[in-house]
Length: 226
Image 1 (tube, helix red, strand yellow):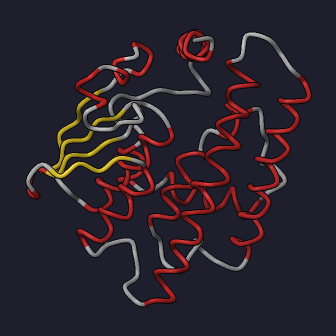
Image 2 (tube, rainbow, N blue to C red):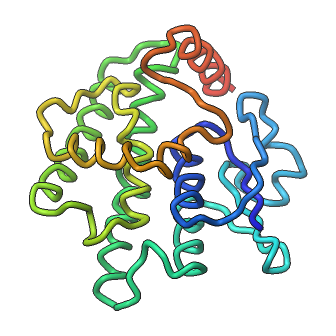
């Protein structure tokens, strides 16, 4: 059994979706980051950086893993799923996973901050991060033109990118001109395990719930201003 400390964020969805895809039993431990509970001592003891997600593997002496990319690798190696075992195949998955961890995640995260959350609108900052995120989406679109998935078969690299790409509109970015990315995104959204993982610890609709979206914005602005 695995304890999953998570919240409704792209990085959280990575792990809940992976657990669902791998059919691993897990207990959800909601960490409402809007309350700053992730900065309290009990959580810091699990992740010194005070960020979700975190897993605790009860089957391995309560082994703790933090950082979403590291968790995905750990789960893939634990189960033998969603990661090839041959050198080239594993490297391909790792390359695309690192592309997300070092590129799409940080850039789109900043696009969210400046486009949605920051109390003052700074056009050059908004343009900078939206443009860079769109450039990274274009890289994915080019890759997906001749590949069904990013690194051969469906893998943790796809899960990592899906968690961010699925809310591209939240960053103010349109992907109408990226048909391969749209095809891939629709394909992943249609997977039952991915759909279920995106509802952990609860469902949130960034597109069709204006009241809920505004609540998210207010909470995020409070966090950004601290």
